[in-house]
Length: 431
Ligand code: LLP
Figure 1 (cartoon, rainbow, N blue to C red):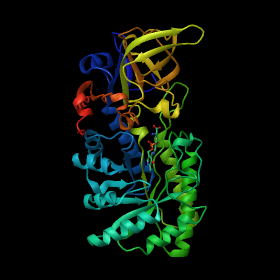
Figure 2 (cartoon, rainbow, N blue to C red):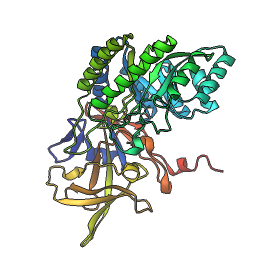
Figure 3 (cartoon, rainbow, N blue to C red):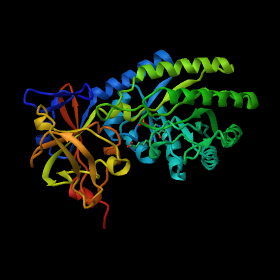
Figure 4 (cartoon, helix red, strand yellow):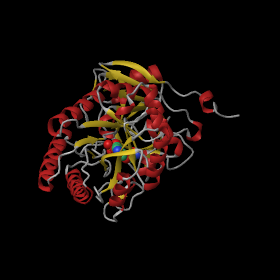
């Protein structure tokens, strides 16, 4: 069933990490985010082990917490020994509340404010991933005022199009992120960083995109980044200790889509790095990776209750659910395709094709179109699979709809990790 952590029990109900999704929906109400933490831990271990085996000593994964950020996830990630990528003072605050070791964080963002810079310096983040020269200067000055030297990586744009959709394609030359090699901006920010007081340049970062299924774009990134590093070394004498290759490994959302071989891709990346560094005669840097979606995606399932089932003869049938774009904006934003099923009829044949509509006052509020599933009736529990990444973290209160809770499942046992927002929560900052 798409991923090994999903199943069907003797009642014909969908199970997630061994727990009955229908019983959880009855216990906690809907919409409900279910998160299988055993699956998350397994993915963390796969990254850690593969990176330890195939990449230079000291190489490690940093969980990209933009994919899923709440206090409990930073605790789990820390228990598994991963670092974390944080992208705002809000993510930083959440990680600190979880007691996350801030020296194991990379602080991202194309527009860190002065406040972000101060927050990052006080928190003691491991590496600022500096995006641009204005940030470099502001960070250097702020560090000097504090009498500290901050470790940094520079965000470089290698100019790779990994053939994903434009909204998540961040490694091309025309990007709001980083300094492109092709225009000379990358070289000039390196030169500037080497002479900026208050910062210590430790290496480079690139992120080429998201939902990538083959090793090839990563191998090209390694080639381009090592060439860049060698050219810089020849000119300025600086060799990077760290190469951060960002995130982007894909996740299977529907049948027919591949499931990337994480270990295999890391092995190939290590081989290319070794060959390329030997060819250009530079020491192989430690590699950081920043997987987000591939760590938490398959761990998540969202369960809704079906309201109306409306057939428009000659057109289509709509199933309306008690959530929608506020808890999962990805179809509305990117037309991202999902798999859905009726969780309380998971063993029945998928005879119908539905457009799954949310409850917002907006026609674009859809979870998917042409979704094949079992026949739906009011009161059924409709589950959308692979919602662990970029759902809760992108959720909103549009139409004043409270955000759903997150229930974690481990070893078949459930626990509330984030409670459902109340109506009172919706107005808590309002006078
Ligand atoms: N590192 C950096 C610097 C990134 O910008 C990202 C994602 C990642 C790591 C993690 O990438 P992942 O392994 O999750 O693919 N909201 C979109 C995805 C945006 C990704 C942005 N950056 C979605 O829902 O598909």
